[in-house]
Amino acid sequence: MTEKLYLESIDAAYSYQFDATVLEVDNNNIILDRTLFYPIGGGQHWDTGTFSGPNGPLTVTEVRGRNRITHTIEENHQLSSGDEIRGTIDWQTRYKHMRMHTAQHLMSGIAYELFDGVRTVGNQIHADKSRIDFNPISFDETMLNQLVDAVNIHIDSGLEISDSIMTRDEINDIMPPDRTNMNLLPASVKNLRVVEIGDRVDMCPCAGTHVANTSELGHVNLIGKKSKGKGTQRVTYNLTESKHTRMPNQNVL
Image (cartoon, rainbow, N blue to C red):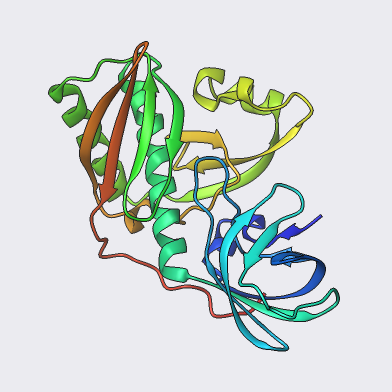
């Protein structure tokens, strides 16, 4: 089991350096006892960055896994089980993922309220642009403008983002299952990390990385809409630069 340092709190996602011990080596796939690198999942792309170890810097190109996080590095790395490394994530990319992911939650939550409980049935979070699949919906230009305007108003209001651990029953007592997509989660998972924007503007189970305040997002800019069939429409967006960006934490975890 790899300790996921980025899940300790919303603030933990702002850290970008950590020390760890190599647990296993399988060719160029490395498992550590702890990590700040986010593995691909929940629609969010993996972090990239470097390891600094006994034999110099190594580039981390891919991160996967749920309980045991595998970091793919270059070949001929010469790392062995028991080695101590310092990991450094690419902060610029991580921060873009954080902003994009929080924006996705906000858009999904507001769309649910505006358009008769429309569900988010898919999403992909990347640094340059991201997308959300909504169902059932048929957006026209007026509806899309209404969504973007409402989202950007909430962004400008500076809503704080928080997280907590809740049971499935506690979540269902507060938020509609159609919004939280609880049916997509394994029944064996009893306790979930819930990310909340403002005072329940949106609440959704999530293991991704997020910003601490909506003012860090910049404004949402829609760049495309596509029908995916059977009442599903895909909305693609990017974010303008924010005047309220936050610097990473300087402490090494």
